[in-house]
Structures are given as structure tokens and as C-alpha cells.
Length: 257
Image 1 (cartoon, rainbow, N blue to C red):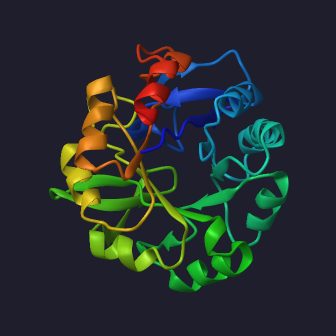
Image 2 (image 1 turned 90 degrees about the vertical axis):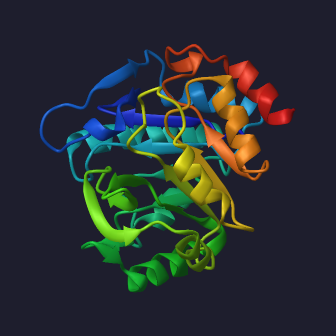
Image 3 (image 1 turned 120 degrees about the horizontal axis):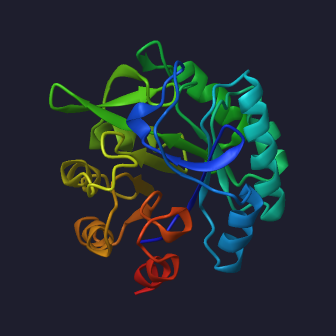
């Protein structure tokens, strides 16, 4: 189990948002807005050897806000090249640019999961550009009809693709890792989604990072126990770096225990 820290960027600032409130109209609910830039966090993660963390650009591609987010993201990648992953507005045309900026992997959702389905042609296109070893698929999910469906466009749009361990295994031949947000609890601090974790534990021989709802050290231990040490975790709003109660140093200790 590894601690994979995050750098979420929105409106030109490092923030923690409540995932389910992100929308193209209006403003999402903010849990925390940092007065430090993205390079500060990249430097901190580098100092503690926490490779594999992810930078997520949360503004819509093509907007001035996205360009400002991108500026901050570039600073973080330059601070610790070839160690951090990045997602947000990435497709086959620009993926190589992000790798050249210093990203170890690009994280993709909406480009591959489009029009409510899996676009296997696009998956092959971006894999051709990045190679399997530099591609992460974001299988973030929301609940509908008591099932987990992959959501896209900054978690706003449901696809018709239901998450299952069979789907994860099939897609694992095209990517290096998976990042899975439990969007219904993302940013809420209400605890991990245990039913989702049970589903993820059925997947074998794949690298998965779980995000969403972590509010206590017990939640982290629950991920370790349920995942048999094979599921990585990320902590957002609950972390002291972002105004929460969980100590950054303690999370590192738990990872190494």
C-alpha cells in the first residue's frame, strides 16, 4: 500500500473541492483554498519520496482558468520531473506534451469514456502515443440505481459503463494503473465507500489508487485490510496540508508500517 498524495488545481489555485458539486455552471463547493502554489506541494512530496502522486486540473479545457491551472501544473512537474501523474483535459493530441513537461503518467477519463461508452479506438490512439506504461485510466464512479457507473467531464456526466472487476482486468492490458474516485463521498470526509472497496478488492494483479471520503486513520487501515495491502490511497480534504485533521507525517508512517 502506498500513499499517493494529490495536487488538485482549480481557478488557478490549489484547492480541495466537494467532488459532487463540480459543474460548468456556478461554483463548486470549496473545502480548502491553499495560499501555496503547486510547486510547494511537489517539493514536499519529493522530499518525502512520495512518487506516484497525481495533479488534477479541474477547470474545463479551453477556458482561461484551465490555462492558469496548466501554468501551476507545469511548475509542479518541473519541480519533480518523472515522478508525478497528471490528469484533466488530456487526449491523444496533447498527451505527449504532458509527458515532455515531466509527467510520469497521463491520467485519462473523458477522452476514452465518451458518449456514454468506452471508445476503444481512442484508447488505442492514446496508448500508441504514451505507451501502456505511461497511461493511467481514471475510473471514477458515482452511484445510480445502486450500481457504480463511470462518470466523465469532471464527474458531471454518467456513462453507461458499469464498474466491475472484469472491466478493470480487461482495461489493465491497456494501462499501467487505475485511479478510482468514489465521487459520492469525494471531499465529504464521511468515510470510505466500503462497498466500492470490496469491488476493487476483487481485481487482481493491477495497481489501483483509491480516493474519496477518507476521514480517519482507521479509514486508511480499512483500505489496507480490505485491499490486503494492494490498494493505494490518497487523502485530500482530511489531510492537514489542506486544512484537515490527518497528519501528513502519520499517513506516511501508515504507508510504511
